[in-house]
Image (cartoon, rainbow, N blue to C red; front, side, top):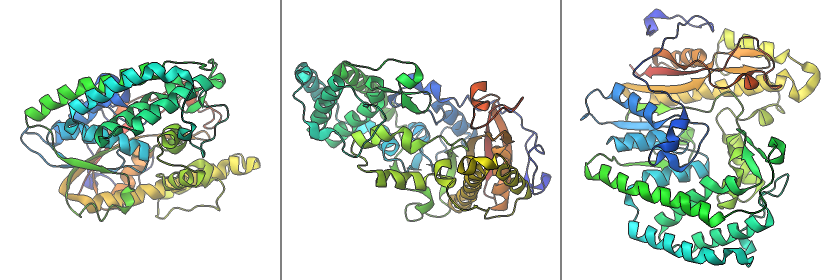
Length: 450
């Protein structure tokens, strides 16, 4: 069932809306990108699949010859932008994380890379790497501002890493150099003493042995060659006239007015950060520092504070944060959170209430911005999941629909995409607390500017 503004009254309780599947939308699980050309270049836990984006494009642009402007305000590593560009649409994206923005930009411009320059760089690295085991590496490539609980790289690995970064820095062609940088960022954790579980943690902490030595050049070159093999596929797409123009900006979408004129977007496809405290900046710290994208904790803190909804670690230390709009049901949830585990101070419910309030305040900012940039009858597809904080199941997708209508958008429907997002170990964690039958799911909220 599709709900429209005339069928709903505000505010909606968490259980007021029936959610039904939309068969024309493919599985959003990002794992499908692991084998898809271009999308497979960079692993990214917080994203959706290219196939999902493709199904949304087919739904919105019924005729293949119809083209439009496609926006992703939280572009991540560029899945929406790449897929829409491959279908001939003009694309625009915003991403505040410099590493993710770099990856999205490289993928979006990949069809312009000079294959001869890339092949020459691959051949040169293959030859130079024969001497990378000699230990005579330039230590200036070790980022001074980077700190970790245990050595991020073991000594033998770190020496090879410095050789690799020195080689990359000498590549003259910027597009080829950036491709190598993205390749390095994509594989660097695999030969480090850290692992994604799914957040970044030490290998010993995850029950794994440290990596004392590794073939850094072999791993890096395998990734670059994979990327090289996809360039032919991209050129074939270009030859058919399919690839559209576009750009991704390493900027905050909320400050995008100078880049994005009012009423110019036909379709927005995005997935803003979930209300799950996944720490995007901290989980990409290795890439940010070792690629020279940031150099100090001050720059890292800037990224953390600008994140959508901020992080619990930041919100917990603030005075009580209130909603910037009227919504009795969300207010009730915030009150319940504030009453939870008060004896734990910042680690109790008040901190989590601040975190949730910050998140929903940014939802309102986001949806007001969406209304501004969409054309009349332009549509937005927002993928979001519910959340469980301190044992309270929060139906974020329903509240996002409420806020959208408060901002003057028409809610065309809320469609369940996945009934279970992760295992029970997450829903029963110490942060979220046991919740009985509650599970984490995922939905698409579809809005229209009327």
